[in-house]
Length: 256
Image 1 (spheres, rainbow, N blue to C red):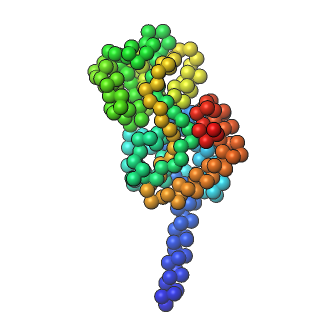
Image 2 (cartoon, rainbow, N blue to C red):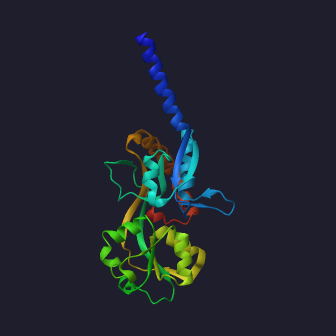
Image 3 (cartoon, one colour):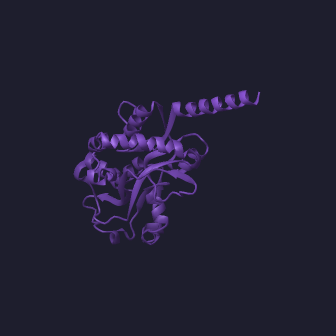
C-alpha cells in the first residue's frame, strides 16, 4: 500500500512539474520598445518577446504574454500571476536573497533625453528643469537613491512620475517637461523614430544590466530558460534579433 502511495506521489509530482511548464507566463511592460510593446496589428512584439518565444519553442512550452503594471511587477510575480519578469528588467537593484535572478543578457545605461535645441547639454543644465520618469523604473529608483542629489536640483526637487514612457514623450513633445530620465535602448528607439527632434546627453547617470527575474523557488525553471537562451546565443538568434530591433551589438554582453 505504501509503495503504491509513493508511486502515486511521484507521478503527481511529475504531472505537476509538466503542468507548470506547459504555459510560461511572461510579465512585460507593454509600452517599452524595443524590448516589449504592441505593434500596429495589436500583437505583442519586441526583442524580449521574440527571444522568449524562441526559448519556449526550444522547451516545448506555450508562451502567454501578460502585460503588467511596472510599478507593482514584483507583486504580480509573488502572487503567481506571472512566472517571470522579462522586459528590459534591470537586475542590479533586485535582491538575490528574495528572487532567482538570471544571468545578464544586455548592458544598459540610464540616460537623459531632451529636445534638440533645448539648451540642455549637461546634467548641470537640468537644475530648475522639469524632468519626467516612468514610475517604478530603475531610473525612478536611481533618482531616489544614488542620484538623489541630482534629482534635488530639478524643479520641485524630484522628477515628475508618469505611468509609462509614452506619456513621458507626449509631455516632452508638448513642452510640459524638459527632459526624461530613461534607458538607453528606449531613448535610442525614439530618436530613430523621430530623427533629429530629440537627443541624449553625453553623460549617463548610471550603468546597469538587464536580466530575467523569477520567484526564489523557481530556480529550476530559470535554469531551463537560461539553457535554452544560450542555444539562441550560439545559433546567432540572440544577435540577429538585436540587429532587427536596433540594439547596439556592443551592449549584448553574452556575445563578447
